[in-house]
Length: 277
Image (cartoon, rainbow, N blue to C red; front, side, top):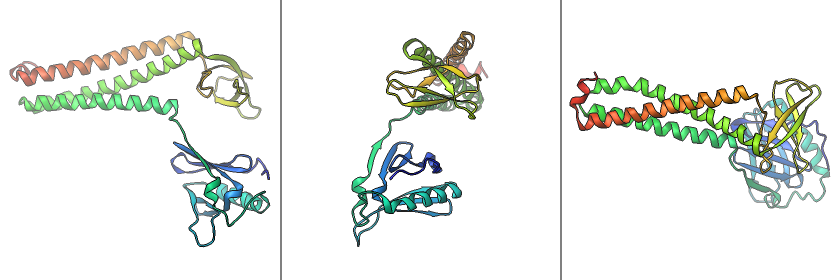
């Protein structure tokens, strides 16, 4: 049986959520989803700021549960009461059956934003590793104070490299979607300022947030991944981001490469440090 759409979405810790999806409960975590039919649920139990979905199980066996912590107590109680009230009338529900057999799970690919941030994180970690190596080489060469002196500047260069890489990634994504994506208009949702809806080729309604204003905004999305959407900015902003990304990225890269090269030379020829410090 269908449940009223006013049933709240329960948001928990570590980006976990619980919501109704037709005649099932959808449990979402950052890397996986579990679609739990109402027929597989024994009950939903709340305890403080946690909510637990208990699955049906044969007598004498351990019940399998899905638990989310850090939820809103009011939302969890309302969600549990609504779903529990609907369970007795669910077609095909058997409280003595193994509910785990009805649950469908799937792994979720990493989001575009997560992949980008991970790349920048690894880039920054690699740059910081080179900086530490440079300090070690200089210290081994007999100038520990010089090693300490180059660390602040190296950290600034690492930050510049990370910011530049992020700016270039954002510029490239927008440039690619404008030229190779699908351009359409998203309509503003009444009474929801900043929220706009557009429909992808499969007929799925998707949303995007912006404070641009107006009853509609232009959006560009990836035909392969319609959830990957960008709101085109004026050319001046895009060019400014490209220039900033190139400047900071090249500055950070050149500075770090120069620091490492100088550290290696100092390690091979310790006397060369004396002239610099």
